[in-house]
Length: 585
Image (tube, rainbow, N blue to C red; front, side):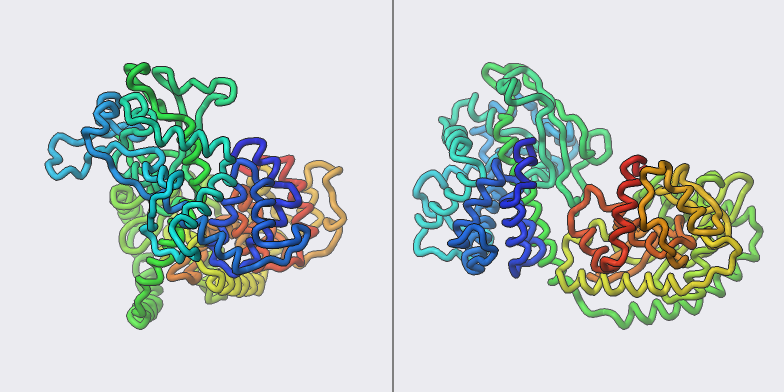
């Protein structure tokens, strides 16, 4: 989003439009789709005025024609589908692109493997913007390959309405430029401007809006930079990342924010792809991502099969067997257990992805946190024991915490499910409400765990609390809330009246960020990572949950507000003032 568009987003009329969209009876994916029509347009304010005029006679009223809003959303979905559909041209049509790129993927640097006789690793020449978009500028009858109900009498009306939406979204000036670009005579020069070479995986990711390119230069000051022999772009992944990004020739996945260089040996006859077309594609990426989310929701619904009784039987059996297995394992020599853990870590590193450098999934349904003693929170093991003994929360069960000299192995069971960071986008509103209720019950159970330690604010074992929010990440233990406040408030001018209030001290997970909440089949399947857990003021659970949401989709803070309500609004405002004077991490 450019600076002008970003400034317009805060306009009152734009916010009113977004509020109307959110109030419509759509699915989460459809809300995101139609909101992207406003947010990602060249002029969000002009788009808002168009939308309000179309759905309401009175622009100052929030009352709108829901039927017309549905028609608009359907039209926009149909238009976005047109920017997704791609027909691969024949090799004869794109010889100049093959000559420029030499069959190498412009994003990953991969080319067809010499032994691949079946063409699995073959690269393809693909358009930046689908060729059949030109149909919008004529009178060709066309039916979307996605079943979308069209509410107009004939194909010409459909084309006219889609072209009108496109003109609102991009402005008439850019639409005219787009028409001239995609309908130009298919000379070698023009073909090179419209096409590039990608691996099949990269082409699919680009077409679905999963990745986008942003020029590393000022296009207003240097509009012809892409006509040189090389130019640089920043590659960005569109959130959320539901499937892994393409693998580069170096063996790792494409990284959001990485630099991409496009090169040509002959800029006069075989120029680089058009930066203008990349800019058009970039504006559609969030909408394309919404369609991907919509398809993901449909696929999940179709794949849900009721096989709960074997899962329950297996869970009941493991719950009975686990304490005995843990007890027997503790009788093995400690050096032998260390050797086993090292072996499991090597095997796990070759079998599973590594979420971070200190945590590794290993065989037998386990996770191992490992590292120097000072890097592994001392309060996590006793916190897991408290949760296991005093609640029925689905949390990892502690196998053991074992020190080998200055090195610690924290071994625990693995829970089913995927992080909420990935799953929330594909959850329906009823599923989100059920999740909020489940999380609220978890928090209530944690609050009932008694503090048998002498300090008031401490970890589960009575020691210092570990928390990313704290200065130096470690503090205490504290014998009172005022003592704790003096530690976190680094400047007197940041002291708030709510800091003088008395808050109940209770057990807290203290890191309910979307990566630590697991979802399976649309329901809460577990809460993980109790490294920051301890006894804190009762508002701390809420403010720490919100601490991890800046930069995320608004659905995440909305979920936590549903879990905790507005009881701690003053404390959150006070905490945000403190966050501003200290980096998040």
